[in-house]
Image (cartoon, rainbow, N blue to C red; front, side, top):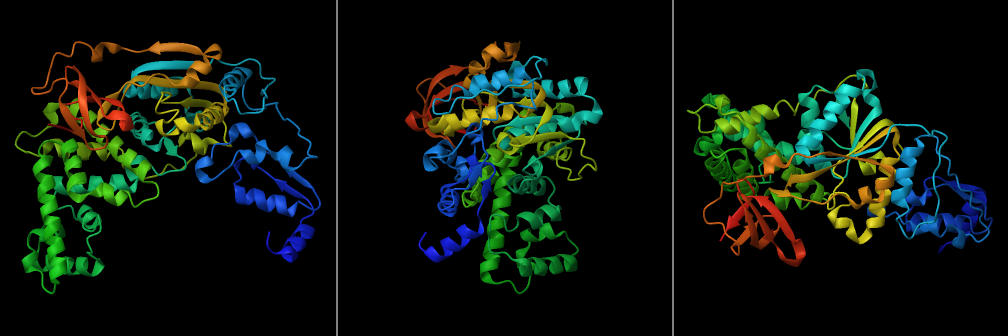
Length: 506
């Protein structure tokens, strides 16, 4: 824009400009296109404003919505025939997206009039939701067609329970756009701490975490430790308790190793109570969250950590006592580590006939015979941080629904475990908007939530409490072991199970 000669050269060089996925362009890209085509006006763009879902990456929907204003002689050709989905799927998608007030009206249509009904299914909790999805796949999808099945979710952290269930049932799957849950760095770091507590001779875990978070312990120091451990005939991980026997360590490194020893002892003290306390202690004494805050995707990583805690809580509630060794104070933690081994294998399947797991953002441009969109609840989808721009969330729902060619299932739960508590989110507004086009099915069983007679001493309405994520709040309702807490305007009202939520009562 400031170099007229360069602009003239490149404008002349590119006499015809074509842009695909124009709804995903940002302001800089728009400006480049506008400048290059300013002279000859030969420009053609293809895009769908209803699929503009990347504002968090800088995409500006105004580029496509205002194209005819920027290029006054432009001709708009609406391509509203859909060759992918059945009309029933398109009717539901059209019903949802039509609620966006700022959009230009259009309705997709298809010659595929016939097709299965779209089911909106309600479950008691996310465990029932996941079990049903896996059983539906096993019973009604042929093995050879697994590659034509996709499970979508709004947040990566929602994939943990799906991955565990598919693994248990030996249903092959692959995660698109992200690594498997138990292969994510933050998860492997935490599990390594637990593995070292459970087995102090675990040298692999020791080497992974000795400098996590960073303690200034480098490869040279680790090599010295390895040599000394070999000379003493002890595991490398045991040497942290015999620092005085290692020669040629600087005072700074000795202090850091001593601090690391104190960290392990502190975690080990809490680990007797099981994996939830062990994880909470690890996060607290290492200040691991502060490390994650340095990452650009901190929110996603922290959600993954909370999902891990939720899974550990579920394990503690469901573990069979007969498998625990009463003579081993860490048997509950050890059983949890052994259980994780089932899910953390890194071997990839050799073919592409796998169920596909991915976030809705990663689904754009793809298509599958069968699609499950999970977690369709307020605060999850639409996400609680997106209420200021719910129209983009609605476009995201539209994208997810129109990935399905034949079968579409929309699932949600009455209760969901997250962040150390039980949340009761109402069904997503998108289900209400599509209700005339879907078949509602109720699979709830509230019996597990009724008749809770057990109470925790010292917990009462009006008592102040502190939660690690939400801060200070006040109890406004008590129902057995569950409490409802008001955290004020910033975090609102939340529900928790006091048996395993990270709460401190004042």
